[in-house]
Image (cartoon, rainbow, N blue to C red; front, side, top):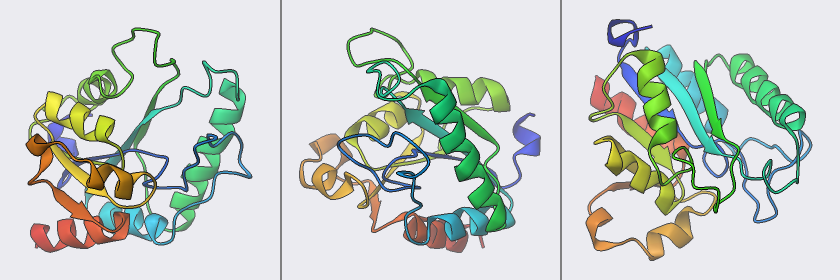
Amino acid sequence: MNADSLGRGLIILDRDGVINEDSDDYIKNTDEWRALPGSLEAIAALSGAGFTLAVASNQSGIARGLFDQRALDAMHHKMLELVDGAGGRISKVVICPHGPDDGCDCRKPMPGLLEQLAIHFETSLAGVAVIGDALRDLEAAAAVDATPILVRTGKGLRTEAALPERFANIAVYDDLAGVARALLEEAR
């Protein structure tokens, strides 16, 4: 897949706190994975308008022994099925299974996950919307010249309250549905 096949463009979403509820105790199984109100419909609206959506998510619960790859795969299967049922599509999911002290280049705020998506889609990330609820999402986006967008769901309110000056002018929305409305209006 290359940039010409991305339709209106690529949009990269964080998972926990953007698409589904987040927890300081981690989302460990399909019972705990619950879509945030309006998130599935937002993904469907963006997909329907021709955007390509991908997910980039830190999943250190694997390194911490809180869940295994099979449980994570089941959570992602549930997410993809629910998105599909709402009429949307997520084209690619990439995760970092490492812990914060593992020294990898894929754990956000490092840009490795986003770079994996750039390679997969054969596209530049300059200007690509990266939607997250945590400072590490915004920092990863800035590292690859993407456009960081903050949602207030998940950890977003705490993140907004402590935003560093360099992110003072980024777009902030109440939730993924708000971002979708803005992106769809901009695309008209």
